[in-house]
Image (cartoon, rainbow, N blue to C red):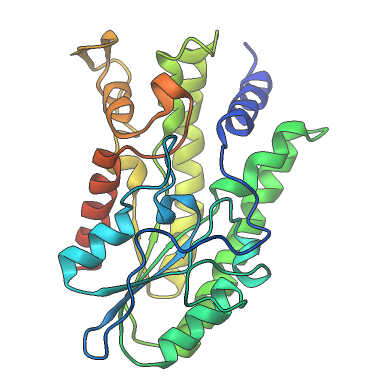
Length: 281
């Protein structure tokens, strides 16, 4: 299959498995939110469904909640299912602390309160979905990644202005398309998996550079959840038989292999939380 066709197929897969609704109206508070106390520091979480804990069976315990609990921080979770990088500054945030404000405006107010010990940002995954139906998906993806970089930079600039010394950790995503290797929904799944390695490496390098510009840390969740590994390194998976080790890992940490859903399993959220904790040290 030509490279262009593979890119189109990957984008179509992204559209097909993005099961979270557009973040157009405030959603109920994520179950991971906790009311801040007057004494403890705060873990401020902004972003998309990875931060809310969205899962096929309903919202569960997200990496943001795990990080806050392990660090002894109160969680203020402003993230919304389906949010894009542009939504951070333009659409209402979610959670009880939002009060109709955008994620960015609400986050700035929290930061100015002086009790924030950690900020996590996970955003950008939903931005690429419209490229699946664009006239030129590859050009759309290229332009969209540039837009994500601009939006992330704008978000970080405002966060830094509000709290110059606060610890910020940006996250990327698992390379869920490694799961196409075993998912029967994708006739060319092995080709998609191979292509995704290069695409995630490029995307992550571009986004990580924005966090670095603003003195923020970057948690490479793609690496943590099995990405970048040689697809020639095989292991015996109890469900799928002999598969690349990176494929087996992403199958255990996300719902993509058997449900074609991009979100993390409970084990996946724990792995992401561990990556955030390590990056924040």
